[in-house]
Length: 248
Image (cartoon, rainbow, N blue to C red):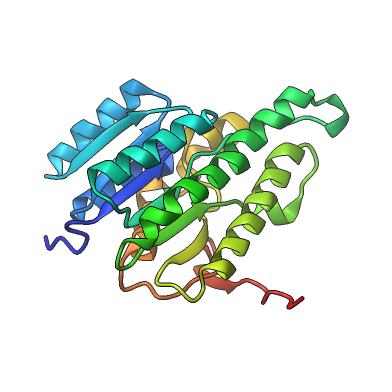
C-alpha cells in the first residue's frame, strides 16, 4: 500500500477509542506519524499495538484535555521535536448530562464546555503556529447534528457543539488566505461507547462502525484537500458551506 501521508505528523485527540482510535489507525496506515492524545493509558497502548501492526508509528500522550496547560506543553514539545504539525483532528468530546436544564449542576455544564469547546480553543491557540509551518496544514473537528437540532435534555452537549462549530467557522475565516484548511466533520450516529451510554436502547449493529466513518475523515487531512470552512455530513455524504462572514 502506498503511503500518501509519509513524513506527516498528525495529532488526534480522544484517540484511545471510537472514532479517534479508528482515525489514528487510518492515518498511521497511510504513513503519518500519529501523536495520540487521550486520558486512558491502556487504550493508548492498545492503539500503539494496532498502529505497529500496520507498520506505523505513534507518540502516546496520556493527557486530559481539561488540562489546558498540558495542551500548551504539548505544543511546545512538538515545536522542539519537529517544528511543525501537518494534521490536527479534534475528536475528543463528552456527552454531558442528559437532563432538563434546570436540573443540571453548574459544574456539569462547565465540564462539558471544558472538553467540547475550551480544549479545542486551546488546541487552536497552541497548534496554529505549528500547522502554519506545514506546507499543507489540515484541521478537522468532530461535531454533531445536536448543535443544530437542539433537542430537549441534551442542552450542554448541543450548546457546546454549537459553540465548537462557531469557533471553527471563525478560525476557518481567519485562515482562509493561508495554506491551512479548517473544516468540521459530523459522523452521525456511530457505534461508539459514548453513543451507547447516551442511547442504550439502540442496537449498535444498526450503526456505522467508527472504522468506516474514519475513512471519510482521512481525505480531509490530506494535502490534496483544498476545501476550507466546510462541514462534511457523513449521513448525507454532503459537504456543506458555512455562511459567508458579515463584513463590519
